[in-house]
Length: 107
Image (cartoon, rainbow, N blue to C red; front, side, top):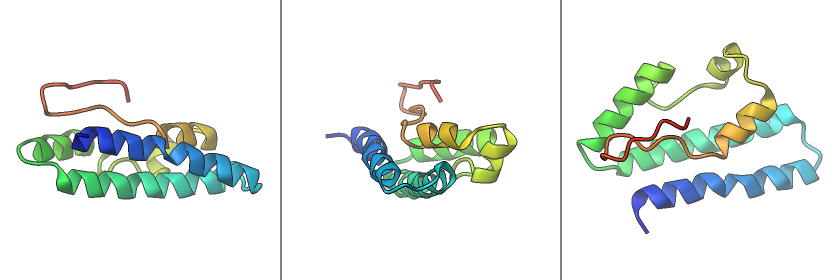
């Protein structure tokens, strides 16, 4: 399994966490804040594991788009008009693959 596929799976696995939190009756805001924080943690971890020169390209793209190498903050997403549900959905969807010749723009 490649580093990228491990990252994508870890992000998709957050969907189970969302389902569990919904069953527990947590609010959409609480769920969004929790999975967003975990998604950012995963992003930081996997970026550190990414070899150069790809890591630098990923950081540059993320900084250009979100103003932070770690990805969008909750404040950034809310300022963009994202609902708590939209934040939940995006936190459980892998972002674009950047810098390895397989660029995607689906985020």
